[in-house]
Image (cartoon, rainbow, N blue to C red; front, side):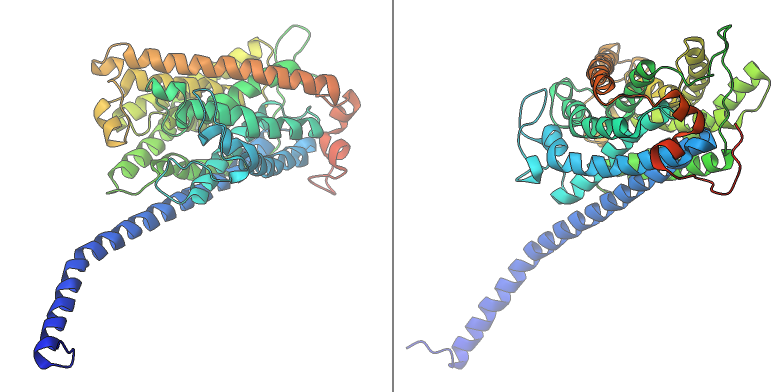
Amino acid sequence: MFSIFDTKNKKIILFIVFMGLICSVPLMAQEGEASLTIGLDTLWVLLAAFLVFFMQAGFGMVEAGFIRAKNTCNILTKNFLDFCMASLGFFIVGYALMFGTGNGFMGFTGFFMQNPENPSGIPTLGFWLFQAAFCGAAATIVAGGMAERMKFPAYLVYSLVISSLIYPIIGHWIWGGGWLSAMNFADFAGSTVVHTTGGVAALIGTIILKPRIGKYRSDGTANMMAGHNIPLASLGVFILWFGWFGFNAGSTLGVGDGSLISLVATNTSISAATGGIAALITVWIVTKKADLSMVMNGALAGLVAITAPCAFVDPGFAILIGAVGGLIVVMGTFALDKLHIDDPVGAVPVHALNGIWGTLAIGLFGSSRLAADAGYTLANGLFLGGGFVQLGVQALGSLSTIVFVLVSMGIVFKVIDRTIGLRVSKDEEFRGLDIGEHGMESYSGFQIIE
């Protein structure tokens, strides 16, 4: 009869238990290592999401500083409500359209975040928060381009529509397994998805809204409407630059061995630096003045331009991409004034034009080797011997996004204009939107002289 109290049997049992523990150690170690990796990646993405959220403050400071004092409260309220509207819209509808199971155009599952798809390797809600921060950034770009004359209720409607419908559909094409993704179109962190979308929406919006009163003289030349607080705008640019490390490097969605994060962060910063320098040189040559506002927009242009290719190019090409971005933002600003398109903060040249440039830069300088390290399958760019294959795909994706946003947002703005109205009255524009729209002053007790 077998007894566990028998000395010999005790030894056998202890031996079996011991061997079981020994055999389970590697499995336990693997499970522990996997859990640690997921936890570390989640922490990294959440920290990046917090940085991208903080960019809302940067956008607010830049836009407030670049406009007149009498409209400061209005623009800050729009920036604040942008993230509120984007969060709700993206939670209820947007995430499902962007990442849900569907077709090449849009997703159809996961509304109200019920059983949503999760293409990342981190918890679903952590991934949602990161993507919601991106959605808010795309929405807030338009506030600057249409500043100082757009009705506040009209802006709220616009913000909800772009956050819930327009941005997620484009995101699905590129990041959600849509038709552009199937063609190996590449946009690592959002030059197209975020910046071209927001910038082109600002372009069609400001065209429909028409220029501010007094912006252009009878002879067609532009009248300078200087921003009221350049130090505030400078602080905003530094906040945006800081937040962009989360924007770009966080798009790795994981830590790995740190090499990819390091490349992306380095490319991000060096492109911003050369963008600012290139803008300074360009505006200095053209106007004979070292215009700080252009330098700041040049740095932002470098950041926007490197957002798509930041994981696919070497730092040397990042310098070139940023420099071209700085040139584009200055010449684009002058071109808009020639066309009588009134963009108070430079949203169109910074985000639309440089979003396009950054997207095309992958087709020029992108490396298939670096792309593979980042988990992408791309052809080498034109200047790396890959021909026009990737450049053609990038151009198609950029053009498709531009057309879709122009048409869809053009319809949205026209509908808003015909229903609740898009533009404030002349009297309200003269007095300032702070008083007319919000019944308060940004600088109470100070005399505002325009």
